[in-house]
Length: 550
Image (cartoon, rainbow, N blue to C red; front, side, top):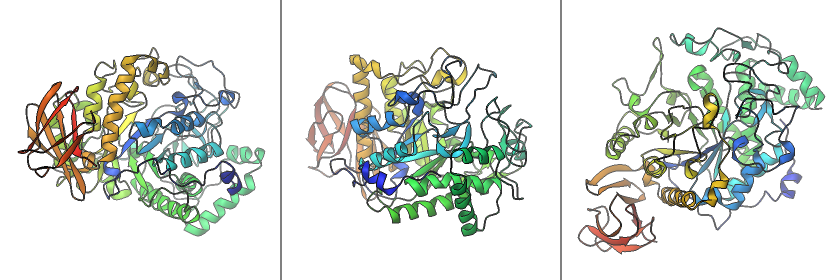
């Protein structure tokens, strides 16, 4: 890996401790369980350096929304420095993969396509120049840490990028070019390619393999072959692992933790890799983060454990509540991914059930997470994503409702870039590129977009300040207006009322707060005292977010 020298870190001013003006969310064992994660594709978020828009000879000859658009790590850094993510109450940034992608483009299916999304890797040891540099990544992580925000990197070890005129097939000792998965049992899901021309890495292989010659030649041209080989020698000597594809990739993935202080991984295509590989990845990531923190005590953001959330596509929280428990059933094998290093799994249920009423959703989620099949682990809820063509409210007609259902649902929450600005999910393009339009910053000139952003910000900051929102036990207090509480040992309780009407209102809080407690509505900023198990408020919104006033 390309290391960032300590002198450069100091020159960039990255030794600074956490900004004292930025409040860290409440510390508890439930912090990741209630986190708000902001997911973005760097290429589509913001262009901070136009000089890197077309690297490695790439061109703008792709189909609509299938070229590199110019967004990069410097664009993300700029929004960090503006306080954009803090204003939104974000706990963690999840970026799609930033390592070096295939240089060419494919001409299959949905039109000529470049690897702007980051899921077509070519070299796991360097940042793709379209996204920026290793120094940019180091600066981004330190900038986030100073603001109380953790950084998750996306991990892909299931496949290389497609074969193109510039990107030859890796040796077949490393990859299988076919067959395409038919989903018939474990082997038909794991030992296969997801789609045509997406070579599957032989992560099950037990025999040692040499480095792919194209990678060796690239490193030689870049003058870092000896360094990469020496690091690999040291890794395999330390761990005793065989030199198989799985362990090369684990080494490369965890180097980002060891060298830059990455706080966690979002794991791509989780069910398409042997689960044992994920347990080994988590073990090495834990070791790497401990080493980085020991070497960089002034740059770390607390001592929270390394976090790993997996994408088991199509698997939702209601599946976990089935009689068989939380196993994923391949048909001929059942796997509990939480036994293989995962702290959390992406919840594919909310996007499907969001049309339903809040109480049904919230109570069922709470029952599963507290005393149910998911007790002690976590889920990451979402309503829109980069590859779910069934994302909720693609026309963005219900963006305010989406914010309430997502940010107040039990569990962790994933905001997809532009949820908070009503960015279109129906762009004129083929396939999933419709979901990946550039961030609509210009819409902030419109009052309705600024008001929508303010709505998301108020909910997000309330959620960040009160761990009980995502990690607490849910209980309904009233039907009209719909009112509920979240309680969590060791953290202040909260009460939320939805559609309580504008102006004067009386909200029941039951015995959640003691008589005479001063509460603040975190949506309007107004305060009131508990009297007879109720609070009276006069606010311009029907949404009320109550917690003890400081």
